[in-house]
Amino acid sequence: METITDNQKVKVAKKLKKMFGHMDRSEMEYCPIRDVMALASDKWSILIILYLGYYPVMRFNHIKKRVYGISNKVLSERLKHLETDGYLKRTMYPEVPIRVEYELTDFGHSYLKKLIDLTEWVTDYSDLIIESRKAKSQGVPK
Amino acid sequence: METITDNQKVKVAKKLKKMFGHMDRSEMEYCPIRDVMALASDKWSILIILYLGYYPVMRFNHIKKRVYGISNKVLSERLKHLETDGYLKRTMYPEVPIRVEYELTDFGHSYLKKLIDLTEWVTDYSDLIIESRKAKSQGVPK
DNA sequence: TATGAAAGTTACTTTTTGTAACTTAGTTTT
DNA sequence: AAAACTAAGTTACAAAAAGTAACTTTCATA
Image (tube, rainbow over all chains, first blue to last red; front, top):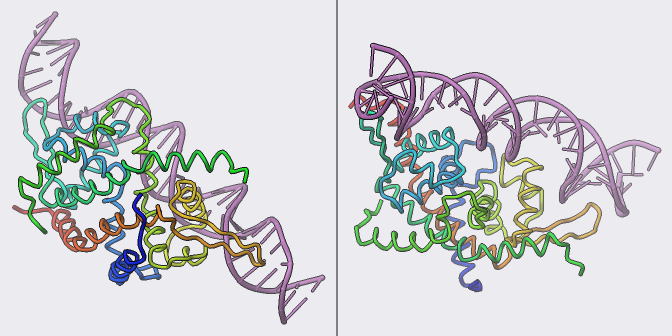
C-alpha cells in the first residue's frame, strides 16, 4: 500500500474541513448527505450499480442471478429507490411475459466511476485485510 | 454533472472486466471482496473513518458524539471490526477513568482517501438526488 | 461511604432482511 | 378448452441486525 505522506494528509484534512461544513451537525438534524449515502453505499445497491456498468442493460432476473444472494424483495426495493434517486432508468415492455429493462442513467454512470475506484481499492487490498483479520482473531501471543 | 463520453465508458468497462474476474462467481461461493466491502461500505463505518480523518485521535465518547445517532453497541462493534480488519488502531490507557484512543492506521488513511472521493461526489450531487426523489414521488403528470 | 467518569456490555424491543409461496396476464402445449 | 409456462414482481411469515436504556468496572475525589 502506498504510504501516506504528511503533505497528502494536509490535503485530505482540507477536503474534510470542506465536507464537514455540511456533515458536522452534531445535533440530530436531518442530513441530506447521510440520507443519500445510506442508499448509495448500501452493499446491494453497490453491486447492482457495478453489474449495470458491466452489462449495460439488464432485466430483473438477470440482475438477480448476478447479484447472487439478493432476494426478490430487496432487489425490488433497491431498484425502486435507485430509480427514484435518479441512478437508473426502468423501462417496461408490456409483452407477455412482461419484460422490464434496467440501465444506468448518466448520473448513475458518474457514480459508477466513483464506485469503481472504491471497489478497485478493496479488490487490491482484500487479501491483506483477510490476513489482518486472521492474525488478530488467532490472538497475538505478544 | 460531467457527461460521460463513450470513450470513458470503454475505460470503465475495462476496469469492470478486470474486477469481475474476481467478483463474477454467480454461484454461492465465499467472496472475500464482498466480505470486505460489507464492512468498508457500511454506513456507520464510513462515518467513523471520515471523522477519524478529521480528528486524528478520538476517544469512544467523542466518536459517539460526532457520529450522532450511533448506539454504544453498534459503535463498539464497528470499532472492533475496523480494528480487526486493520483500518484503525486502538490504544488503551489503564487510567481511571479508563482512556481509550482510536486512530487510523496507514491502511485506514489509504482507504480514507477513497471514501473522501466518494463522499465529495455525494456532497456535490445530494441536492440533485433529493430533487429527483421529490419529483418522482409527486408523480410525474407527463 | 457515596459520587463520578469513560468505555464499554447486556437484556430486551423494534426494524430490516431473508424465505418461499403466490399473483398477473397473455402464450403455447396438451 | 384447460393446463402449464414466463417474467417480474408482491406478500406473509421467520430470522437477523440494529436501537434503547440500564448496568458494570475501576479507582480517584468529595
